[in-house]
Length: 295
Image (cartoon, rainbow, N blue to C red; front, top):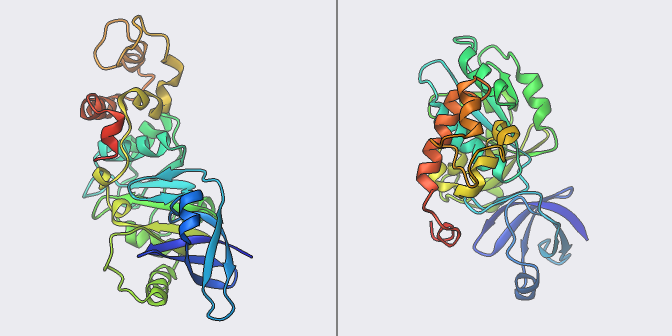
């Protein structure tokens, strides 16, 4: 019996990274009925078939986190890559990704790239004030790269960043073998690099990187949404004020006696973060849980 991590799944075949290399596996019908459908990122046990070197999945370890869109399990760190240098990142896009990750119980990190061009002081102070870890880095000069690499070691990570923010340069600076690792797995599976929109894990900086269109840019429409009643908990800086509002069921948008709004007015909660919360609230306020499965 071998242990491994599912790197990719295509057409009922699962490609599992193990100490012995990548092994092509299948899940028997009984496995799917009793255990459930495997996901990329699942840590699994498999039985190797010596006659052809393929395997059968036997067990899925309990998932620490799981996303439906994109379908990936056990992401340990979601890094939102942003920049104050042109093209500047809109804070709302960062906040939407962070809210989804926080709701799912992932560790989050804001990575400010291109700080050799602009130190991004406003963004840095905003997320520090919100209690979110922030790193200033430069893919050009290498500043902050070692510290960021240390945060990735042994984890499944995902990076999100708008076009032009330097995410590709950052990934290659973090792990010069990154492009080759992507190609090697595609070659092993026998499919082109861009023939699918499925999520794929590639070896990266001592762990794995979740490589999928939903993370490669801020395509948050492809990611799980956060329901209205859960949204307030996805903004960690709201926590000290929840339950202190004058009215039960306060939406923290414009209500009188709202403790969150009072904290915003007092400068205890960054105003841009609250503006993002209001935009997200408006987009999901009428959404029901059953509708999430259809979106």
